[in-house]
Length: 413
Image (cartoon, rainbow, N blue to C red; front, side, top):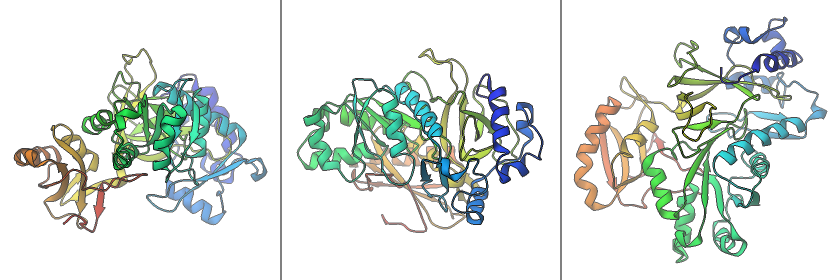
């Protein structure tokens, strides 16, 4: 368990859950304690979707009267039908506190003017993260998406010192700057904070962003249906420090068997979340489908909070004949070789008949190392790989999330 002093908070949360028909049935009509948690059923997103279809819009797991809600968000729906989330005013205050602590760890300061460049529509990364950024003490400029050219002017005019956006956004903004004959480094940003796409922890991706902008990058982690931002990199050690103390319990399970794994340094598996002090749409033993590693050893920064590294999602897995390959593993291997840039995987079929087709941006001079890189990929993934070089700038860069897996098509052939 990742949260000290959580027994009383969980007992109160479980008593609150019993106010909903969904959780009353799940808890078996009796009082539960922290010791019972590993024995309670898991919750999966399809149950939430089914519940909201039967009792729209929030489902039978809503734990407060609808008139107490002050806002509604929906999840991004990237892996299926979106899920509606209700929030009370205390839920928003908690979300801001959890996120504000994370943005502080990411290096934002009270004297920063942060351009918030996530989409301000529907999902919690817009308005909710805006409030969390303010809770860090920073001043927030609500840019959203579709304003890249205007933002380039405003950075100098207003004194913007930091940018918060998806991992893809810094590359997109750098391309727009160069189209306007502006060198990104000349804009003088102090900090870049990323969210929403695993990858800022990869050496090559981070190095490319930092070299382009002359500013350090810190990644953050969050989930719309848990807390919109709830972890961040400090820059001193591996992983993202969780800021969920007193607001969520993390379990790690074997993704295949569902067995609970010991919560210790280096444990790897699927992350399972249980809310604490959540009123409207709380989650109990929610299987996130996020796969990663937990670090519990003290960090060089002096913080003792658990850290996580998200390696990808269970539902992103590619099947190459009889071998499971996670797309992030491709990126990790490519990042070990200098001269290689952004990449994309083409998945033709399910399962994919080998070889797995991988495109990577590289200058012509790097072509000589590609056979060795392909062999490294084959050994690491356990599957044959066809590695194709494309010119830098060939693969699409989006203002929002950049696509790295193309299923059933090869747009680069």
